Length: 251
Image 1: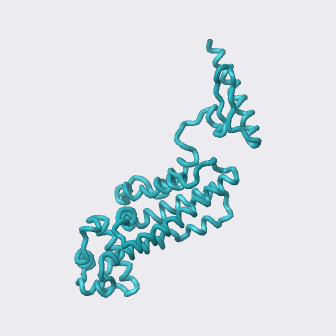
Image 2 (image 1 turned 90 degrees about the horizontal axis):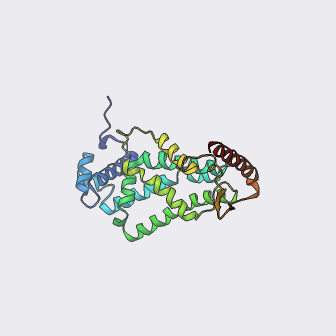
Image 3 (image 1 turned 60 degrees about the horizontal axis):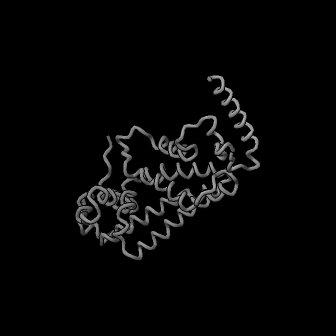
C-alpha cells in the first residue's frame, strides 16, 4: 500500500493545494473558530514557520479556501448553459454536475463554504456573494429557457433556483462517502427524477399535469388548457368516460 508523500516531499506547486485541503478538513472537523495555524502545521507535519512561507494568517487561509471553492463551482457550468440541448437535459446535467463534480468531489471544502461565510473579511464576503449570485443566474437562465419553450411550468424563477440548489447543497450535510449505500450517480439521478416527475403517484386523471378537472355544482371546470394539450385532453376525457362506465357497472 502506497503512503501519501510527506508535505516536504511534494513538488512546490502541489504544496499549496495540500495546505488548502488540510485546512478545509480541519475547519470541517473542529470548526474554523477553534482551529489554529498551529493545528494546520501539525497536521501537515511542518513547523508553523514553514507554513508561514505560504500563508501567514488564518483568515487569509479561509479566504483562499473560498476562492478555490468558487473556482471549482464554475468549472463546466457555463458549458452546460451553452449546450445545444433541450432545457430539461441542461437542468439534469446541471444537477449531476453540481452534486457529483462540485459537492461530493470536495465535501470538506463545501462543508466549510456553507458554514463559515460569516468569518470572512467584509471585502471577501461581498466578493463571494457576487460570485454565488453569478452561479445562481446560470441555473435561472436554464429555468427561464425551459419556461419560454414550454418545457417547464411557469414558476417564480428565483424561488425555483433556490429550491433546486438548496436540495443539492444539503448533500454535504448527510453524505458519507465511506458509509453511504448510494453512489453520487444514484443521488443525482434521484434528485433530477424528483424534479421532473414529482412525488405524487400518477393515475389516469393525474397524468395530464396541465389539466385540472373537477365537479362543482354540476359544472366541469377545465383549467390550464392550452392548444398543444388538446390531444392530451381528448385522451384524458376518454379515460374519464371509461372510469365512469366502470363505476356505473359496480352499482
